[in-house]
Image (cartoon, rainbow, N blue to C red; front, side):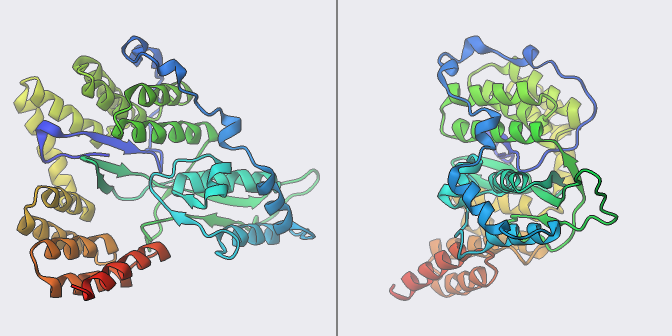
Length: 384
């Protein structure tokens, strides 16, 4: 989650939907921890790995039914994945804050790409399939909520038949399973990542939610768990830096940001560091970093979308429209951009433009709940 145009209130967090590429840097998490600052963090119950990936009886029954009397491993994969995605079985909805365990995701029917991947991994593993997590190297994708801008990553799964004793598959036919709210139509590079890194991502995302909600002991508890689980995950140190900054620990925040930069030259960490430099009077160093990042981001539609969302929050309607249009000039497929224009024109009293852009947003919706949401707004508009 990040925000960069208003230095006084910039806060940049990263949601681990994917793991950033990291160098082989040995990190001692103890050098960045500050248990004494967050009284009560010990009382937060952190879900262990077995709970995060555990299956309920209902999940086991579901998998058993999907693969019943199917001997061919490739057919098992197809049947299981079809069952998971089939709306008649599970009316899955997308929610970016659905940072839930495998069993909770199954029961709630609500998921983000990480929780969906965790649930599917657990079920495919139970079905005796070979499951691998993959980091998807997508362009920077930003969302905005509660005064924070949020950098969202992405992961997916590769599911293959599992080699059994005395059996070798010459060509392992498998599936790539992707719960993708952005609907990318191009193939981005992927890299296999291990289960421990996924567990750390889960903790990191839970921490980000608590941080936004200003529950700092809980945020620290989850970031601490993430750091102990996979200290090489740079997102942890960016978010830890934000947490320290919010609690007035500027030196600790700077050290955390520097750790993230050492791991993978994180732009988000650099951005936070620049604003920390501004807070501490090192303005020229801050300007150099921000200018470099700005040049890189001008070609990213979500950068302009974030600026538009910030302008909207400040009731700068014309500025918001200009930024939404720049986002659309770079990518005309995202329903969020059209909705941004619709809600801004509504604030300006232009109901005709509001209706036009709501219809365009609805046409580009990828999920049924978004389509319904836009239709509800169109219905309300006709009554005005």
